[in-house]
Image 1: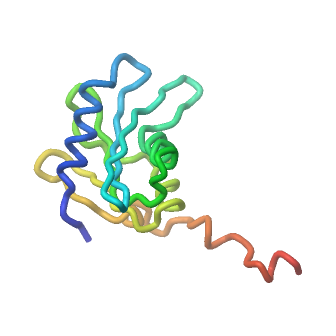
Image 2: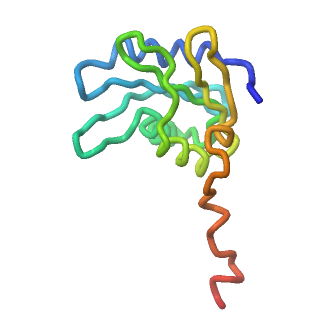
Length: 138
């Protein structure tokens, strides 16, 4: 079920994409709203061996700023590409770290906020497959 869109968050990511994404190494920006209301921004770090997406960098940047609970996240592409949905890896990481996070997806007039779990139907939840304390000693 879609929730209201945090337009301030989309604008923050759009501004970072416009002003900080340059060349082939930084092509995506992300913004996340922490539970305390702060907005944290970041850009991806492209490398031919793979590199962290903007969503993953923003998780680390948020933690470095003491923002461990994120409520909403959005990624925006450079060159005015607008909102870009998270890749599969980012969807899984977001689900594992922030199972209740809202993710802003869609294009132009169709932008909406959806629960991350809606982006991974029948998903693998890492925490569900960890041994309980009683199982660790058997």
